[in-house]
Image (tube, rainbow, N blue to C red; front, top):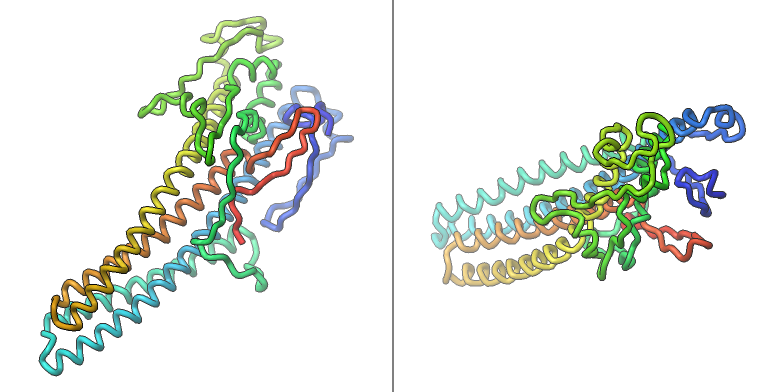
Length: 372
């Protein structure tokens, strides 16, 4: 696509994708309606197109997050079913022990509380799974297909590595930023001068998909204050009261400039948050997996010692509950990690590109989350 036909202002190869997400088809009449518009109206028209694209990306992210939540609740339901069977078997053993005078009535009562608690959780997850499926149906605008492939477990390796040194220019394709740019151009702004003044030119990622020092340096530690200082060296507006003005305090009062600045700050903050989550979730999940393993050992030892009469039933029940809780937390933590990846995909404007050179901007998009 030539640069003058692209909403981003850059030449490139474009592809068209179609997904049945309950969205009505959209037709861009470049040779009729658009040609008859004035420059200002044309830029306003392009801004509305970016608003539509922003809604579409948000819908894709919402569908992905809803699907992941559905899978997580199904895993929690399965875990609860298995745990309930274990609790019921323990209750039967304790009941027989009580009948022959080995276990006390207190032991039997404590064992029953575990069974009833698990039954309550079972009903909760059955409800959530049904609600999750209804939510997906609503987002898709149709019933889930009968031939939907079986999902991989959430514990599977679903994430891809992010390239090192992703340029911040990648964010210039975010719909909210492009929408703000078209609104600026509709107000007779020089978008090249605006980008040079307000858009930080840095790398986003370092090794292992973490935030680069340049990206982290844009925000003041602790408070999250935006530290980038615009440098206006060229007039941004070509007409009106601000024509030829280089005074930042005056230019900032223009509503379209303020919206443009806000869109840029939001974009960099969302990406920074997403990259921070990517690093810390890996550490959190490894610690939680180790915690589950430790609780499994605790449960096996407590059960053995209880069966041979060394420890009380209370220790055994505590081990059961601790293991169940740790396993639930591992599933919910993994869900949080995956939804964070979906949100990072959205923050990057729909994934990331592996850029070659400006002469050949062939962009093979790599999904940051594989759902199936």
